[in-house]
Length: 145
DNA sequence: GCCAACGTTGGC
DNA sequence: GCCAACGTTGGC
View (cartoon, rainbow, N blue to C red):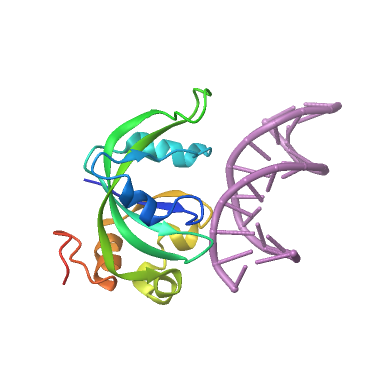
């Protein structure tokens, strides 16, 4: 299983919107960047990801799961763009801010810091565990600590 | 709202 | 295939 991070501007698509999309989840539309798209093509159903609020908030607020593999982005006819479906899994008991991430030397190589413009990013397992721990979650079981 | 970083486009 | 111009992202 792989781990990822998804950025969204909360005034466009917030964590609350994602939760309202329910168990089925919904397409993670609007990605128009080849690198980000290629990461989505690598995703498998069941992969976990952080839901990050960019622009406003600047924090990881929840955990999502890939609920469908990459398929045509329904918001465009352009066949170059496809995306996965995501569903909300749980809240971060305590949201983890970009500031917190930058202040943690274990996370200095995290793509969130090094490739900050990339809107869909891979997360290494140790980074996953660490960010979960900072947010009050066990990264393996996704239960509160 | 500014601007740095960086991806994309298009002329040559 | 280079590179300048341009557009977008996202932190500050």
